[in-house]
Length: 375
Image 1 (cartoon, rainbow, N blue to C red):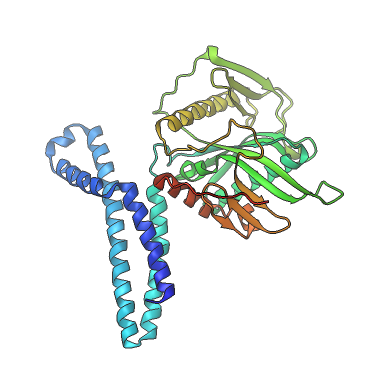
Image 2 (spheres, helix red, strand yellow):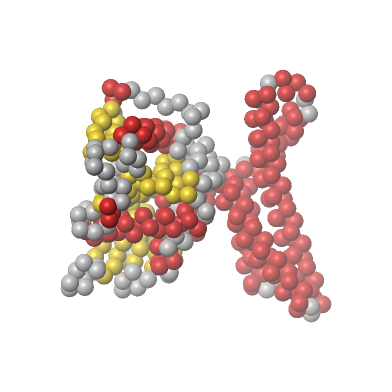
């Protein structure tokens, strides 16, 4: 087997192995048989809600199992075709089969990620908060760079992005910003970005052109739907109003319409200044607070969800999940998975999918990678 073909086969096998582990293959096959039997029982439809739940689970399992089997069959067919073509010296057929394996590997990777996005809230829209760490202008500029990176990532996926809250930096950049990202599986993808992000570069604010290290944190939590009831006691809340601010005069109000809510028991703070109505900003902030509380509960119940999240630790050295080095060399390195990119400009322009895919896969495998940070 040629090296190029074997490379694609190995990639497909890795995706299939992860899919089977995620599905718990033998259990999934038994469960599908059980669901098929239930669907054939006419009494199931006496309870419409239960019937719909059964049908949804059956459809999801049937689709995942069918896709896995189809990829396995196509891989085997193309591998056998290559061996036959090589034996006959048919280079055109070999090239066609290798191209088919390449396309199949890409499809397997896509199916793998779709399957991994099966968490309780993964399909939801998401809030994404960015906070500058210590370091004044340097970190605040880095926080603004991150905010652009995530907006570009969302745009690449066709997601809609709304600015919910914005606190401008003292000289440049931002102290914090909160975005609402709307799109299918927005939370499922973005949840892997929660943590501290580190930047190393020649500072544009340093007249001596020295290297600086800056830190900013990212927190991602899902938008919850009306069917999820999160109880929040009014006595647990500290509510402040203030005058909204924004870069270049954007979103600036002349009244104290912005709202900040502190949930005293948990220490969670949320804010909204997107609307000129204090009432609407308060409603938005309450929705954000409930979403934060829901995300915290998800982390408690799901061992695989955000187990490495360290947002409550110091935004600084030793807590970062990813380093972005622009000088003296070009490298982005994820310290959880070991995934790297030598094109930081592309990453900062929103090319985050490889990092997200690896982090999602790691939640299934549970494999920890010993990764050294870059200087």
